[in-house]
Image (cartoon, rainbow, N blue to C red; front, side, top):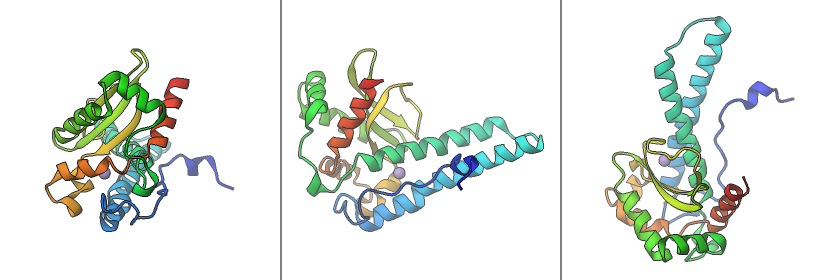
Length: 208
Ligand code: MN
């Protein structure tokens, strides 16, 4: 039987599509490396820190709290963001060109049109300083969808805003397929969005 401690660590999620299914947005080689090497590094890195803290507490020894928490934030944040990212992607054949349902309505209300939202989100993605993410969030206090530009995995985040969709703007997400042409990477992203997942995330945020 699985014990409680076995589940108190991170594990790499399975993707809901094959490694070759997101081409040409992401080639099989690019997606496989991204998932099994880059994403997985946050899992092993985060777990190593949890184990280090577990051991220090058990042994009654000290550890560098400041450095450990900073590293844990990097790894845990990286894992969460990648989970969100894989979930809001889908093979092109199964998606729609434009959003549908409630997300389509709230984007139209806030931005005036889907095209305007797309343009602002693209600018957010392309202007992230260093490595980071563009994210579509929802602010329950104002009932507005708000774009979030994240540096690293968690700098500039709005606390408690629900995340509906993210786009990985780390170089490791596109270097094999696009080299330095990140604009082409972002342009292709729009054809592989799982709007059903985005709508489900919105529903969950609104139900809270
Ligand atoms: Mn990544």
